[in-house]
Image (tube, rainbow, N blue to C red; front, side, top):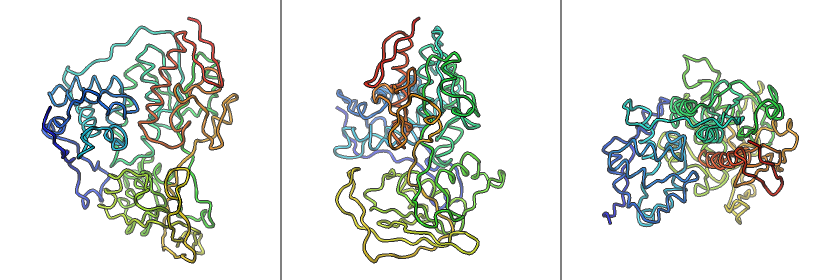
Length: 480
């Protein structure tokens, strides 16, 4: 057995003083020497528990073996046999709570940096011009057509897997660019737009057609798609409807939802000012309400857009923050201030209707709630005021109700999510599948991809004549 090396190879990144002034990628990626050194730490376990922690079941030890042996073409082949978007996953997936958490080395030291090695392999493929890379050979067409609604991680994954199986796949995207939340929700310094579009191009290279500016539920309905030559529809529109605090003064000018703020910065290219004159009004004192990755993204964008002070207000303690530890650490290094055990109570503004202050209350932690985290309880007589001229509310999202309200036969939950079988993605509407945040509420990129893969397998079985059913619906197989 190889010698146990409990220390992982550090990932090079921009210095905090420099990166706070630009939107360039913070993490710089491994060099060849660093990647081989990190890959050499892998014990190549017989039981391979890391695979169990991967929602798309990548053969992690085998692709790492390819890195260690310098056979990157083989590493790419292994990665892409399960993961259609490795350059994205290597950057934004929470490996520390999934595959890396299962790593045997994690019991005594630092687990293998699986995400960083995945990024290294994917980036090599995107930049390598040799003929060593595996080439896609199109299968015989099945004659079946599938409409995919939404081009986020769930939609792209489902589309790619079905195209590899010979089905005709068309993605309908409401926005003017493909990528969904990968494009509008994640900043350039964490996930470059060029990386997303390179992965989109890979999906297109499999034969997938992408139609932009199609708002399903307005431009065309699900039923019209099913009547117009598509045997199956997959719904992967995500969860893009922001949640709010619902407290007095929340309609004042200067208060954004994180969705609006990040869309202006990312998709509308506010980060490229003055080349793009996108209106992103950021004051001197910015408060971000929330403790997830979206809150970290918003806070770090505000700093880069010139805010003098950026403060994250979170109602629990640091230990309960849902954001990745890496993103919290990066935010702290860049100068973001964290104010824990604090909750907003009301906003006040000036005569022009612009926010000037946020009245807050201190919190203390009580018994665990449904999430398993301690429930925050307001301390009596603990009110205080934070001066601010910009507030970004990052409390999470729910699905946009457009498709649900325009499609008969879709059962939904009280949270607005679509009811779908967890193993197959099959909904209560015949020939209609769904997956990702639309069915679970806001979650991770890789969990949406896992749902896409399961749905693709179920759809393929349905299209090739194998009966597929859920407790609430039995759909007849299509005749060949």
